[in-house]
Image (cartoon, rainbow, N blue to C red; front, top):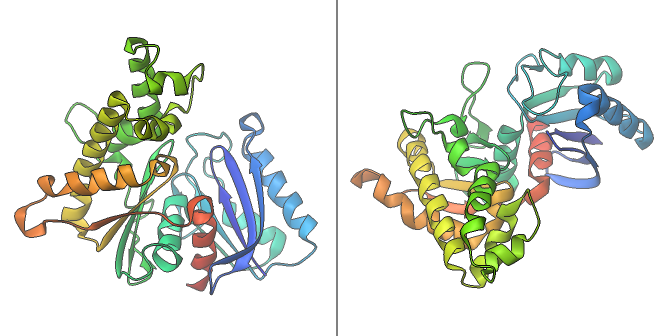
Amino acid sequence: MSIAIEIGGSKLQIATGDPKTGTIHELYRYQVDKAQGASGILEQIEQTLWDLHRVPKAIGIGFGGPLNHETGTIATSHQIGGWSDFELKKWVQERYDVPVVIDNDANAAALGEALFGVGRTHKRVFYITLGSGVGGGMVINRALYHGTVPGEAEVGQLALTKTGATLESLCSGWALDAKIRALLPELDEQAPLKQLVGNHTFGEARFLLPAIQQKDELAIRLLLEHADNLAWGLSHVAHLFHPDIIVLGGGVSLIGEPLRAAVQQALPKYLVKSFQPGPEIALAELREEVVLVGALCMLNF
């Protein structure tokens, strides 16, 4: 039995599974209590592994934040306190005395999609997660690309203007929520997007797809603007790495085919002629289990 763990800013997932097939057998999902910080997450991990009543063969961890994958030391978390300079690999090995591999959660997700998701038939796979933040990972010939510590493929930090706009500031879930929130007061009360959002004051982006399905003109315009910004950012990925496929993951990717198709259509205009039409744009297949599958896959290397 191998263990996969995803430590995020809002959720903790722990699973048992098979690294060779990427199959998850048992899955435990918890909401993170930010007030309890890193110590609360560590206590939950200990309790869950204790309740399994089995000794794991190895443990793979995808962590939501910058880290040193060679030493397993966390640099920091942008959402949860208590992680700065924490030696997570050492902490786990002291308790379980098994092989432990730790990497950034976007890297883990990239490996999962490249080996057992939509990228499995391609040699060069770039994965971008469009969630509360934006992260990325590159897999070449079934192995993660690693730059110099502390990280690589931080696509969310691409500067798209000289005045500070980054791909994350324009294309994250939070950015899309804020854009919708700012426009709602201008809408007619009967507008589908306004009716769908109602009194919700967060997560407004999840209503974009049903509004588009109702032919809401503003929703369609927002989608096209979002896809255009995303395509502009991904053109840099194409020029640097020229992957076979770019995989869209994370909560914003749940908009689905309308988003994928709009990005695919917008991308070529930002590429040099010799690179056109550019990489295939695809939606992630592994959804909420993608980091866990990738964490299992890391144990094969």
